[in-house]
Image 1 (cartoon, helix red, strand yellow):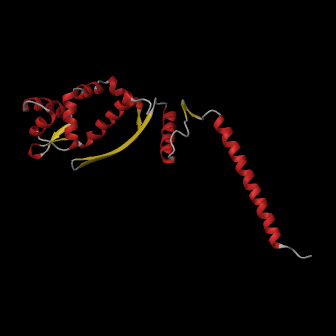
Image 2: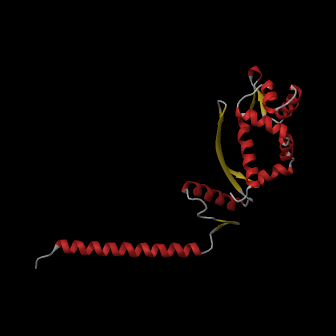
Length: 198
């Protein structure tokens, strides 16, 4: 009896395709069932899959959820960014920051001291101008609308005492490189408070 190899191959191909289709349907049904089940927990933390389309971001979130649940902290954070202006650049990555330690800044008074220092519109305007590029006192008087250098020096002293600004050579003031991220992250937090839907 002569074998028809082409027919056998076609029959096998059809069987493989049918099995693949069945496996795909079975996998899809399992994923739907899994999605309907409660999210898994790590300690007191409920895992939240699918919050962002980027798998790399979801991987970071998953590791933060695991660390938070295992340590029994109230939360864990990660943040990163880059800021480049006026010929200066700050780039940062903070990973696995304990929310409990951040909340401790309220208890020990550190948060109040920083917010009191930069909490005036005049100081925020100076910070904005100096974030854009190094500025002299004369430039700050002109750009920020002050009537005298004394007003600028008054605010500069407070910002320097709080380690926000420093004087470079030739009388130019700059935001300390290690403070740029904090200022921008504080503004990001304010934005979140003003627009919680985003």
